[in-house]
Length: 86
Image (cartoon, rainbow, N blue to C red; front, side, top):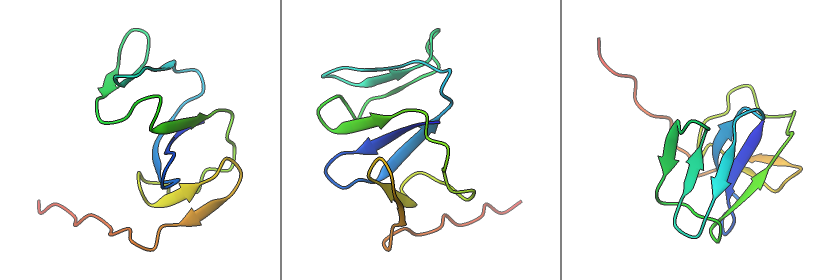
């Protein structure tokens, strides 16, 4: 997996398959070729991208963990989203 981490906080924001391209610029981050989606609020100065990560937690979700390139830690401020009513 490629993990996109907010550099200042080490919050793991996105987990992307290794075979999916990521391009980080001063403006934003684009994912996929062809383009799958754009991350408009992150860029190459605010994030670090780690590749070939094999120990992603089974219950991974954006912002649920911090990651420093080696070690995962639970984010004490993470709040599980409420389930949608059916």
